[in-house]
Length: 183
Image 1 (cartoon, rainbow, N blue to C red):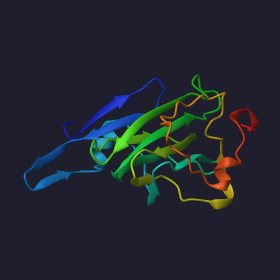
Image 2: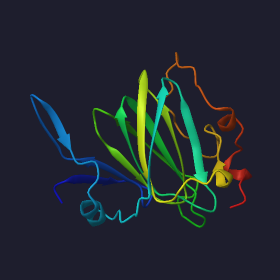
Image 3: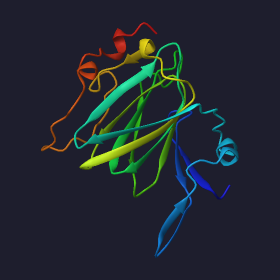
Image 4: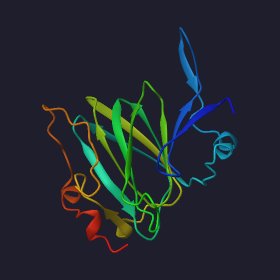
């Protein structure tokens, strides 16, 4: 493959991608997406939209999913650092309700592929972070679902330092737990 290195985890379908970086005294060059290389790695998704968000230290976004219009996502950080999390929401999956997290940063240039039917969220660990993601379906505001970030049934181990004050949207503080979902 050469262009990318792919790591899998205990949850089928999740992939951490490290692209090949070419650098010298002037800076660096990296291909952030190459359809053929990703297809060879088992990521044969048709992305239809790119999104970017900016957040400050302590912002926690998620855990989000779309109910009837699920999206696969390819996410990365272009500035700063985040702890990125995916939760398996696939009905009948042997890993339903399990999570996996990875540090994504502008420095490590790692990407995280999250298939459809996963909840997704991230915590900003740097002073500021810009988060970029490709998605396979358009956003449908009336189709949004979520799970509270600290659901004890999931048990995400967020790396929250003692001095960090979490910043969540009102919507994100109002989600129920995974047991509350009719899935």
